[in-house]
Amino acid sequence: MAVTILTKPTDLILAAAPELLPVRIIAAIALVAVIVAFVHVVRHLKSIEQTLVKDDLVPTERGPRNNVLLMVCAIPIIVVALLFYLVLKA
Image (cartoon, rainbow, N blue to C red; front, top):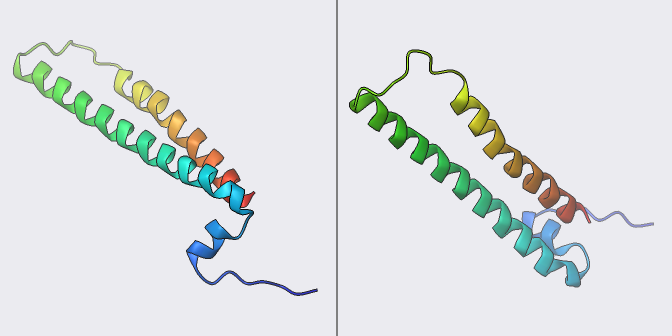
């Protein structure tokens, strides 16, 4: 019984059956797209906050709305990252 040691990160991607390579590429693209969308949402939230502060529209109690929104946006990142991990391990 021979043991194969993967020495390069590319070996991990190419170690499985060749028919899984397109799935892995799509999973990697999906992970990057979800992270880019998350960064876009965070930047948009910051610009909205700056506009609210600039126009003096800040309510007396701001509440945890940003934290909840960021957690909701982070859930797809976690799900896609876990799926990407599973595709890499297949």
